[in-house]
Every structure is written in structure tokens, then in C-alpha cells.
Image (cartoon, rainbow, N blue to C red; front, side, top):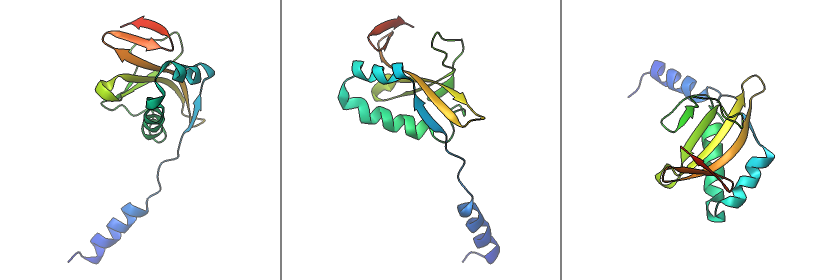
Length: 122
């Protein structure tokens, strides 16, 4: 049977507040990128964005990384997800304002990346 001290410590951990949630804002162009992707993926993309970006958008993980070089769209981070990690979301973060700005939604097919209807070589 756990001691009172262990129960108090566990209760303290369980009662700790969650980190503040970031507001997620979609750039107009990013919203337009949904049109170039089959609609059956819309809910998966939205769920991945919320799960990955609402609480810790600047913490690197296996599928969330800071970009190595500057992009034309101003993104500083990307997340990868979906079947075979075929989707990418490029975004920027304002930590002071607690805001994530989704700048582009892309689909990777082979060594090509499609943002909207534009093709980019990797």
C-alpha cells in the first residue's frame, strides 16, 4: 500500500496545471492549400495540427523540427505526419504572444513536395 507521502506527491503531479495553449492561426494561403489535397485528409490534417502545435510547438520531436534554412514563406518549423509521413505543415511561432501561424500545408510524393498546386524539389 502506498504511503501518504507517495500519495501526496502523486496528487501534486496530477494537479499540476497544463502549459498554456497556443492559439493556432491559419494564413490565407495555407487555407487555400487544403483545396489541393483530397478532402478525405482534412480531418487528419487538422487533428495533427492541433495535437502537435497547441501545447509545445517549439519542442523538437521525431516529427517536429526547426527548419535548417530560411524559407520563402517565412516558416521556421515543420511537422511531418500521415501515411508514410507524406504531409508537411510549415509554421512560425510567436512565443511571447502564444501564437502559431500555419503558413503552408504540403504533400510529399517521392522526392517532390507539393504546396497547393506548386511543385518543389527537395
